[in-house]
Amino acid sequence: MGKAVGIDLGTTNSVVAAIDAGQPWVIPDEEGELMLPSCVGLGTQGNLLVGRDALRQYAAAPERTVKSIKRQMGTDHKTTLGEKEYLPQEISAIILKTLKQRAETALGEEVSQAVVTVPAYFTDSQRQATKEAGEIAGFEVLQVLNEPTAAALTYDFRTEETEKILVYDLGGGTFDVSIVEITGDVTEVLASHGNNRLGGDDFDLRLQRYLVDRFRQTHNTALPEDAVTEARLLRAAEQAKMSLSEHAFTTVREPFLVSQGKTALHLEIEIARKPLKI
Ligand SMILES: Nc1ncnc2c1ncn2[C@@H]1O[C@H](COP(=O)(O)OP(=O)(O)OP(=O)(O)O)[C@@H](O)[C@H]1O
Ligand SMILES: [Mg+2]
Image (cartoon, rainbow, N blue to C red):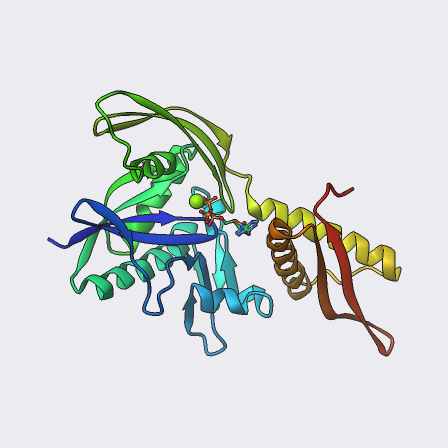
């Protein structure tokens, strides 16, 4: 029987961990990266790209790149990549398989079992799709575990007394706030609230729309609505959002977004951290 791993299959990033001498440790890839961007794509030669390589091509080739597939889990939404159509669990399986290989390379042995985490707020069909993704990737899925439970388990504050803790998790696609009760080895989610359709992706979309509006006001012309322009703006919006976590102001620059006659129009907008009028 192969070893078991724990996997956080995130909207934006995924992670695989193993237990060694009772302690969990995150398994890095061969370059030392701990997180795998949850992104899948087809390269120019029709080759499959997963993680950073797929994310890197997103703004240039959005039609060949899939991001945030977790948001579609439990639906029958089809994604076309090249000649093939994929269900959400099949795209997720590609991410899980990459993590399986990463773990097997690092551990030097077969890894055949996994515990995969899901937002506490996930529905039965979303959980079922997650389990299926694991099976397609070649795992026996031992458990589909709530993310706040997994988060609570990594803290080593176990006492004989019952502890109640609050786990707050704002991810790329989901927002969960849970009250978890820990008694000895038993961790139970007592209450959970949140929104499994609210996360950093939504902030990016808001900011992207703001950029579109500001561009129209400045240049008196609308931006084209093609997939590449939208993807470039979405990437710029995410980078601006991250920059605003550290700075009070940031400047978004996207050169050559659209041509007007013989002149190219660039987007250059300063954004403040203080609330925007959207
Ligand atoms: N410095 C930062 N400031 C603001 N947002 C950030 C920063 N760094 C990352 N993010 C955002 O955090 C989100 C990803 O967070 P995380 O990796 O926890 O999500 P996830 O686990 O993949 O998603 P989920 O748990 O919802 O499935 C993305 O929307 C990303 O843009
Ligand atoms: Mg998460």
